[in-house]
Length: 285
View 1 (tube, rainbow, N blue to C red):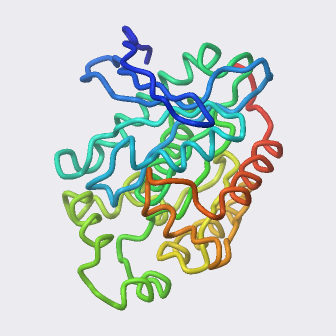
View 2: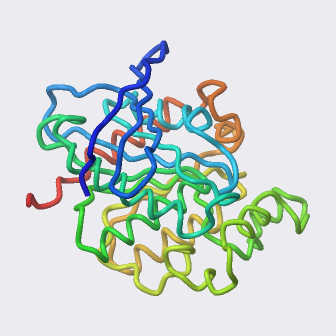
């Protein structure tokens, strides 16, 4: 799926990495807002990342994804963060259908965006981690585009919202924001059985791109994220799972969104660099 046109919107003054807001046109869809972090470099095989922001499926925007996108871009990657349709207006599978189309656009434009041999990754935090995992499954099932890896940061993967880590974070409050988000995202009860809606429950997890799972020790999503990492390993995939200590304030940083850099920034960026270094480009087409 190729873009009919790409419309620049505005550049954003920001320290560190360049940022530019744009709209891209996709076949049979309304224009999609994206924010591009970083610039194409002369480094071969540089990471090019499609990023999904957090927001429990029902809220969040490009600004809320800025903290994670900047951390990724600070490692030398080019990051394309996009405004996927929220579950309040478009429940499953709306966000992942648009996400896959944007991925196809990004892959077709990979040299223009990321440079020669740019390697395509998916990344997302919280609800965005779920969407990134789902789009990785779709890319595998459709045999295109080839992915170099996926980065799942405190991903929402369990609609039962009953893990010990989540219960501890919410003081056993049943109607927590994550439960409410899942209820909106899964528009019909049978959607909870679909592997693209709930990648954590998928029965087919083999032949996926290398994966980095990163959570905090006090993270509500810790248990479901580490369970998914374990299942990916058992299915024969390359997986790195990192648990940041409480002093890192990772969970708090994710909830801050655009308000600044987290205390764990140096450590997190080092994990990103090591992951990029360890992954190899997928076979050329």
